[in-house]
Image 1 (tube, one colour):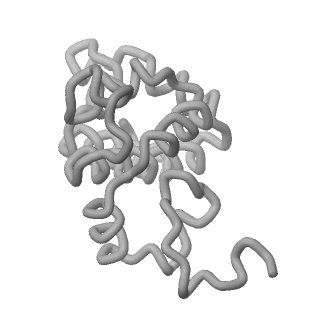
Image 2 (cartoon, one colour; image 1 turned 30 degrees about the vertical axis):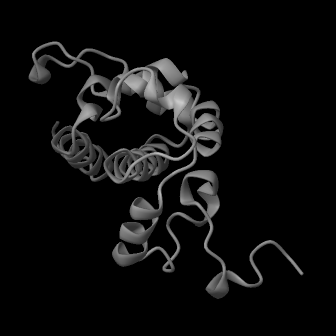
Length: 145
């Protein structure tokens, strides 16, 4: 039996399974349930490695204290939701830029429209994630940014 043969009856943690994050089984309701269930620390550590970010860098943009990512085994609802939103944004960015390194480079560049802040620094709020996502859409469609 393959890894994805029984997807209807499984409850995978989407932070640990990048391949499935854009599949139809991840409806908004399912994301709500995943946020409520919590993201595991081990999955965040794996995800940080997958996107070439340190745990400290992610801790700066998560809605929790700096020490929380090293202490909690399962994150609370708000932090889990934020991790899922970051994961979705990263998938969008990698799709637009064709690779992770280019997307990370773009995220780390100061942006004049953001008063010299980097796009990555805006990812500490859902409003910032939406702002960066909207900019990725404009880039993808070739619109002025």
